[in-house]
Amino acid sequence: MTDDLITLIKNRVGYITFNRSKVLNSFTPEFLGTLIAAIHAFEKNDEVRVIVLTGTGKAFSSGGDKAFLNALTKMTPLEIRTTVYTYFGGAAKAIKLCTKPIVASVNGPAVGAGCEIAVACDFRIVAREAFFCESWIDLGIIPPLGGMFLLPRLIGLGRASDMVMRGVRVYGEEAAAIGLANQVVDLESLEQATCEFAEDLARKAPMALSVAKEGLRRGLESTIDSEWGFNVYAQSVLLNGPDFEEAVQAMEQKRAPNF
Image (cartoon, rainbow, N blue to C red):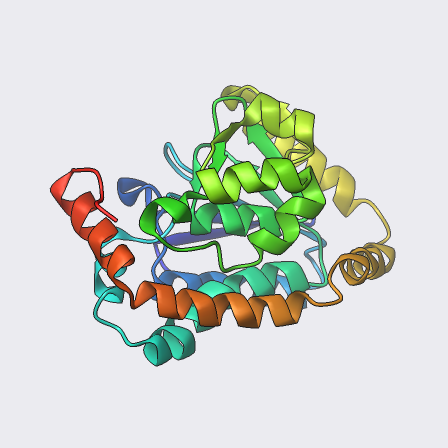
């Protein structure tokens, strides 16, 4: 692993910590490649029964790295689809298709791709002040990593529409009330609550956990692979369009985008 990603095994739980706090744990393809490798390594490790994802500093993840977002405006749809989503889509798939339960310990904002990664997890333990935000619409694009498929099934179509189409933030208490968070705690209690939750899960029969996870996923996702494919195709076109370029320029210039 690299300094950007910290891994630890304790009491049959594998902890993966995003360690890019200076940039609010934002994602690059290279970083997500490392995350995918860490998930696969823990999946193969018999010592690990449950995996936890969390972040250092003030954020779970702010989503795509700003420099990377700017670079996207110069890429063709094919480059975006074959290179970028190998890692962004690959990280969401690695989490959802992992044979072991994955818990997101959401210590702060989970925005854009950070929100999609948290939603792809099986469980979410959330600090009261943390929030989820599918911020893509404000960039003129869509959530392409499975959130548009999973969110309506987790929280209902109306609330999912608010998050996806309006970019509404959902904070800890509301997240728990609508089923987006399994547990909400004060920030200072998050680490302990996460450890207790994960260690309790790790005490369950590992094969049953694996089969239950697969069965629950099968029950939801008869077309999820098709949805991922369509979303990435549509996203690639949108990222190559004028609205995304305008949004990135507006972000850099600290002004409202003019779509």
